[in-house]
Length: 500
Image (cartoon, rainbow, N blue to C red; front, side):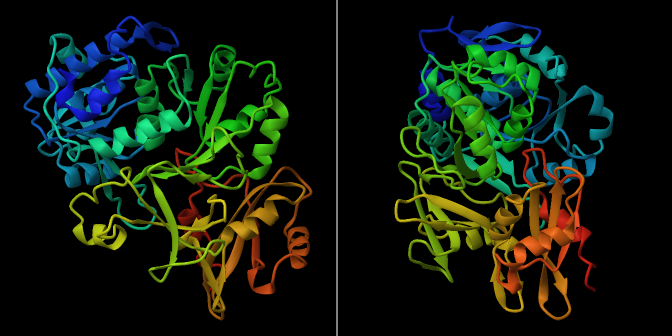
């Protein structure tokens, strides 16, 4: 009965005939089988349809991570609708924009926010679901029985994910059934996931990384997951001896490195540590390998493309790069809309079945970033070496043009990060009356004794003068979003008046 719905068909296929196979263990809750997972998803689908959800309708969800939240995702797709996950940290005003733009027919929220969100829900029907899997949606689903997935075709939408909106209002990336299942199948095979794997799942599920990579890859391979509400060093370390894989962001790895219990013995059963969503420092790579005997596999993706490149499972994993274009995906670097030679820096473009369908209700923006021949302009500055390894050097919008010269922030950051007494840095451009933009470095020291004068002195012999920071600011930490990405827009706003 699943054959009519492409994404669900693929996600279900690995566990058909193995209903009793374990899908997830959860802290303080009973284990869940694959049979239970999909039976619950069917009840979710039936519940949504009972409230009038039709094929193509959007179902928005601003809920905490739980098994029921995953079943809501699967149930939405089963019903032929389009899943719209929202970060629980979004304010009511932010939610109002997403609801107004996507016009969902159903909006699922935490019961504690019900009264406040009624004001912004518009025409959407409000249902509730909390972290303990209680609420009006859970009650409605419990009263349902089986459900036959609604027929869809590969090009039909399965999800809309809104971008972080760092350069203007957020855009809704439209992802089809084919976008999601083709990319997850590629990752399953490329990273060699099987039913023997046990994945530590500590990522949020309102984001591509946690929902469409970690969850989908586990489902497609029939793997088990240790389903954690979020990052918890104690829980991850406790799970590691019986697990085989961990997907995380750089912050996961730096925090785990600070725990003395992280040893080769603890990680002996693990076969794969994956990092993404933000750049991983070379130093973190090296420290992790020294502490565990494992080399982290770094990959690259975006909301609009899911995953596009990855360091190889079998082969050289090069720190500082995001690896090779995945099978079936093409990557190139352009300047002024023309492809440039290997080794030169330009704008990274990718093409493949992973690339989204465009931005929801933004045809002009879609035309700007998605070429008619299928190449997506990522907005990331990158270079590709003669072996095909891709190195991201920053966002195009983060490029600093000082006195007419291009300054690539990552080049300066790499030198600063290597200095003693420096934990990490972020380099930005801010308005300057003479140079147009001035290079500013925001530095997080490891402790006392690190000062701006010493950093400037150390850089003076390593960088051309136009690349050297005209101001160095010390901060206790860099502003980050929930996926660990440094928010350079916030830093540019903080230091916007520095020279004016």
